[in-house]
Length: 233
Image 1 (cartoon, one colour):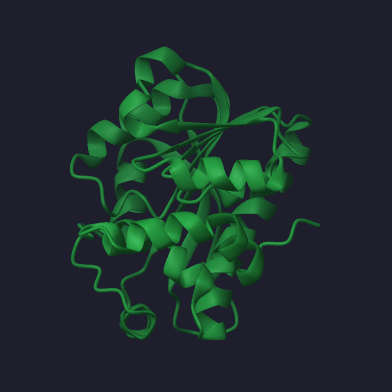
Image 2: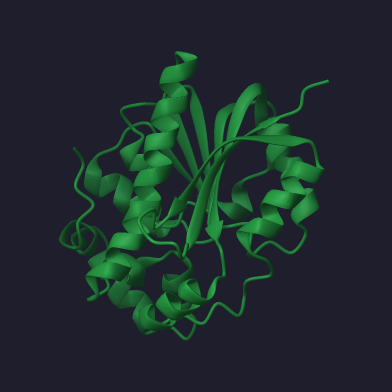
């Protein structure tokens, strides 16, 4: 099993974190990639961010096994690229896309993953990847997007007819807000919560096949992880 411990992540990204910390926008970039959460001194903060990641990984593995193939994965908004590392033994290829792609490149090199292709968002063009992916992941991404409707159309365009869309996002509940404050984030750049996103997917004809709320053992949820398929003509 691949280790995603605080020590491993710090080892892979240490020089990058140091260089970014002295830049004016450095803290914001680290926050967006959840780096402080993975390295946080509070074990609850670290557990929650890892639990969300493991939930995505397990659902991806289950869907792949159910359909009898690993296929190609697009991890849009990949952050530091850990999902691509975890999925490396289960898919043919992972295309990992983010605004800042250097951390994913460092993670790929650290874990020696051959079938992961990190691409900067500015170099990723939806039209070049039509019907290219069996799985598309957007983990804690769509709450940031300005034009959600257009973005969902782009996801549909690169997903193969029987492909699945894997979504994760914050509930924006009071408990989520409290934990976000403990972790040191503000969240003012969130345009919507996960329920808004799920409703828009449903309104556009997508069908949810599975959902998991995190933390599973508390009545107050912070994240929802779900699987979606398109309504085909």
